[in-house]
Image 1 (tube, rainbow, N blue to C red):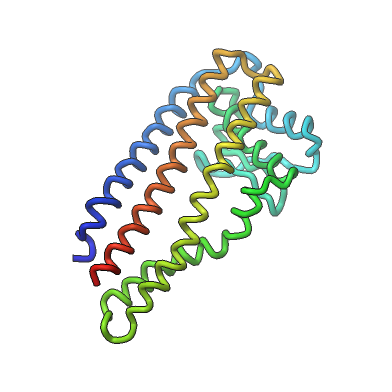
Image 2 (cartoon, rainbow, N blue to C red):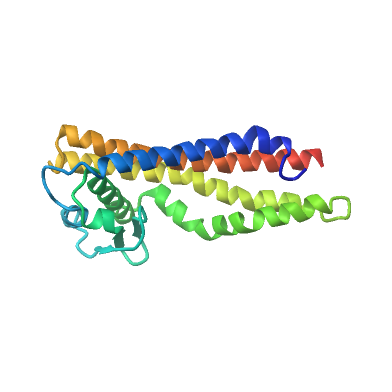
Length: 229
């Protein structure tokens, strides 16, 4: 059975449970520290703008975007986009997230190698995510008719999606480390407040670990199904 094979049970389901746990950690940490405000009373937008200016990145804009936890840095337009809960709030969660996105802007400005690699494989990773399973499924169903090569093609393109998740880890961990360092070095958070920001960013980092685990689990499942066929 396609949906209840051994690979699904052994690899994918445990990885998905881990991913759900990681998401719950993010919601818990964010919920807790979004209610604790910093002694500086600076909003996420103000901290992001100040940190960017200090890094010599006056050309990078800070704007508000829609949604919750939709914060990101847009390297094409050089814009730090912050969700309403981060943009206008002075919570420990808001400051940690804002500084994290500034960390990505600094990575971009300094040509941080893993970020450059990740950005360069985005089209291939997107193709792998969309096309791998349809290709593999067709080859799996019609194996023996000459179409089984589609299973190998599906696995090959999915490798780009796995590679993307693997490269994302150092990119995100480095941005978080930069965020903590500049928040601490600039005195934006005291030592107790810094611990709250660390917990939010650590929980967020766990989701990227979980995403990589899910990607590897799917890859192992495809390899197991191909060998059985």
